[in-house]
Picture (cartoon, rainbow, N blue to C red):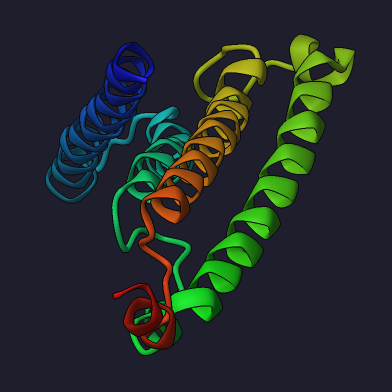
Length: 175
């Protein structure tokens, strides 16, 4: 698992770096647009579109990276912090199954959408690029979430093998 762990760490790092880079670009473009509009009465025709597409990119790639971290986006911390043992195991399995099914279904839909001629051939008004590029971070983010959910299942299984989900009663019986 060491090599896979390093690959997953690299994927998370790249997703965070892409989200941070996109956020930085959005900040620079926003500031430039504010200066141009209010000081010179001018505007870039592509700025609003770039910022809107950037928000989607940051949300999908940043969200995927955060999902991997403990207490990430999809967690019932309020409930799971107060339950132990078998209940916590079942809750973890239910949550991750829902995440796996949802991200897998949405990933497949996103891939199908990316392949449709109407998306590939359509050119954005401001940036003059194929609409494939603004839609791509959605598919990437969902695919990364799917992979990280599989990793969470592995971690749940290994934790169960180590006895991390034992009830207090089961621990007393084992001793």
